[in-house]
Image (tube, rainbow, N blue to C red):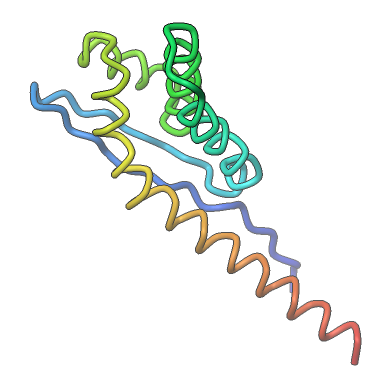
Length: 126
């Protein structure tokens, strides 16, 4: 019997805009889970900066980088055009998608990997 190797599952979601544009979002949960919190924390830190024109620009850039990280640069460009570069409105609309779809998938993936690691560690110990 051959040893089976498995690939990380991809999360495939769709985002529909009011103008009926459909964005196909493919996320490699395993790959993204390694850096998601780091990228998300960059946005949170930018939100905490003192309000100034320069810091709002930093927040906008950080937000766009994060959205691009999550849904891809091409989809982000489509959303920027759709929201006419209104970063705050875009962020208000995309955060629920990230919180309700992407984040739970990553948490489940990490929990599964931790469970497997603990199981293998227990087997080695006995």
